[in-house]
Amino acid sequence: MNLRTLIHNDQLRNTGKTGWARYAVLSSFFLLLAALALANSVTGYLAALLLLPFAIGVLKRDWRSHIWLCFVLLFYFMFNVNQLAAAPGVLAYVQGFLIVTLFTAAMFYCRWSKAAPSA
Image (cartoon, rainbow, N blue to C red):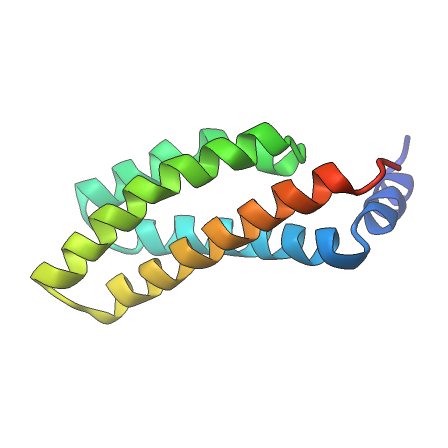
């Protein structure tokens, strides 16, 4: 298969609610990785590094990886709320927004991709 066929098949599979959820997952996932790396601290780099294994499952559309990502994001949300309580900053608010967006989009992607017929 060439790249044009892969892109065309990807566009056919990304229609409707599932497609919107997938684009939201991809964009918020990689923006969250960037926001964690921008924290310029060891914990920020470690948090970004711990999310990297989920990139494979997200790119492969594995719904189980999305479920585990949601589970891990609960811990990220817990630490983010603690960070906001201690020292609120713009980057912490951005990280919190991206965590909530990624959690919601991944949850909806799992729900809608399992309900949709596979192409």
